[in-house]
Length: 145
Length: 200
Image (tube, rainbow over all chains, first blue to last red; front, side):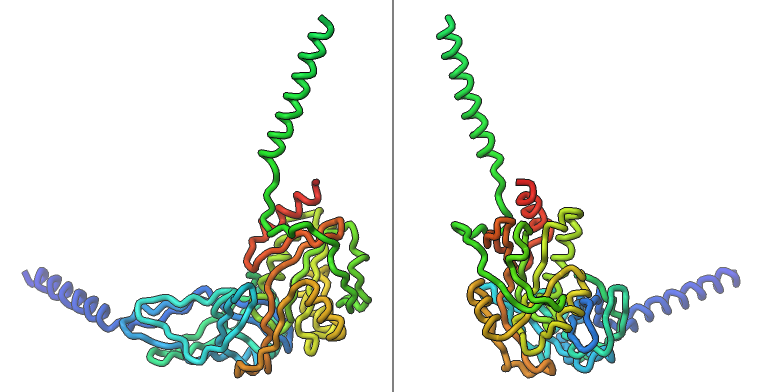
């Protein structure tokens, strides 16, 4: 009987821990599939990725930092009658329960003044700063589009 | 009797020719790019090449030429297009020897011959970059219908951006400005058109 009681007690503790773990799990913004175009030292490049905000809080991407270039900016390319135009984005909305996709011909992180050549297969680190959620750091792979 | 055989033979011949024309019509190749109406000789291009030699478009007669107008500081559309061009040449295999890819700058203030050379070598050392005096470039931009505008309105560490047309131009082996492609046309579609031009 005592053995059965101990087992039951153990299960209750385990169950409680599991439940509390679920509730305490902090929802975060995910950034995935980050890649960048090849580039030459002193030149420019662009980073692309997917941001997903599974939380219930609207957020905004404020800036992206990296030591790979002297300046890092968020830009959006748009095509107007076949003409390519770029516009800098100072605060990019990342709405709750939505994805924001950075891809060629659209949103991208512009690397200005590369501190070194970016060759296919290279990786480098970036950090994204959001208005509401914690920073997200990740590695970017240099590859061809 | 001989006359009758001749008539039957003639009828068979006419039907065969008609059928041939009909089948040929059915199989007429539809280009993936936009075909110029009444294709004319491609406007002349004489500029400075990234190979340190003066470039003359006439030197590429008998070759298919793919021309894209862009700039090396462009982070997005230009590298995407150049990567697509690399994919086109890979898809063509040995036939790529019949094709020359040319990248003409829309940013002569920053794009020197040396810069074009190092930039293009990231994609394919056989790609040729062209720059030159602004007046010479303006003539080429104008004749190929390229829109290009320096944009200083964006507050960017890049100094300035250049808004520009993103079309790709194809000159056929006869030296005619024959096809044009919008941004994002798949390398497979472009390679298919080139294969057709090479084999016909």
